[in-house]
Length: 106
Image (cartoon, rainbow, N blue to C red; front, side):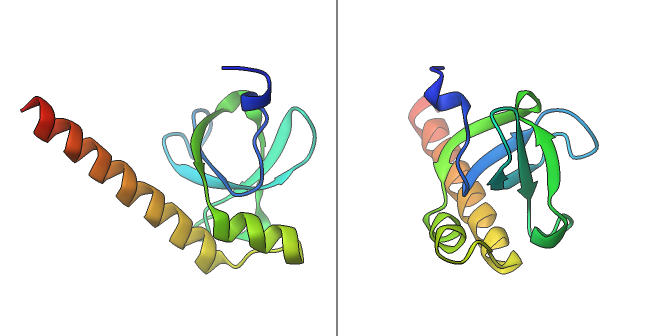
């Protein structure tokens, strides 16, 4: 992973590695500095109550939600519905990719 890949951008999907939310997927809603970001999932963790998280405790995914990224860029905010939609879209794509791999192998 290169240095540019290690800094997340708003709208990027991450998997939480440490803490109470470990194993869950969230969306980066704000980059605080080179070490911390704020994440939310739109369900248990709303945009207005985003969680401050150390980047080292997150696994960055390659997927960036265009809807979330554009909304944050234009208004500085994003609706919780868009966050939920982005996560559902990401997990559905991930599941379909896994199924494709299984059908090739099996």
